[in-house]
Length: 76
Image (cartoon, rainbow, N blue to C red; front, side, top):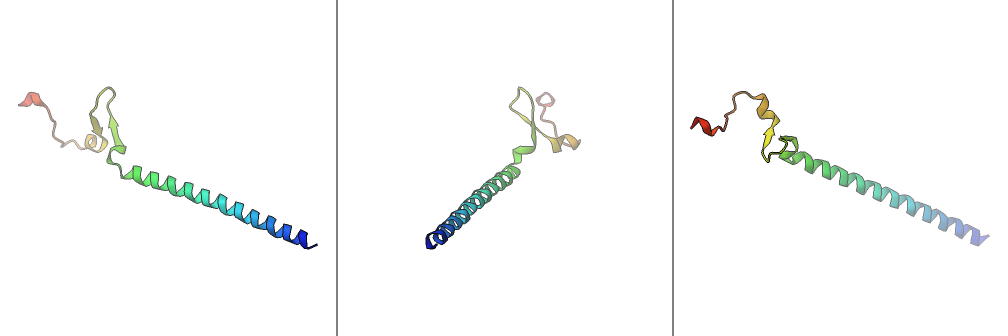
């Protein structure tokens, strides 16, 4: 009877250990996902719209503002 009680204790300990491992990996994954989203939201180029076939970008905020300067060399 003592062996059965010890086996149940050991089985319960293994079950608790497995639950702790699952929670650890779940929290680590959530922390990684949150960190990636925070870093991506801090990147200023995330919201730029890139022109196809061109290396320049168009800032969506500048398109809405009609008072922006144009960099046109033909006016010089």
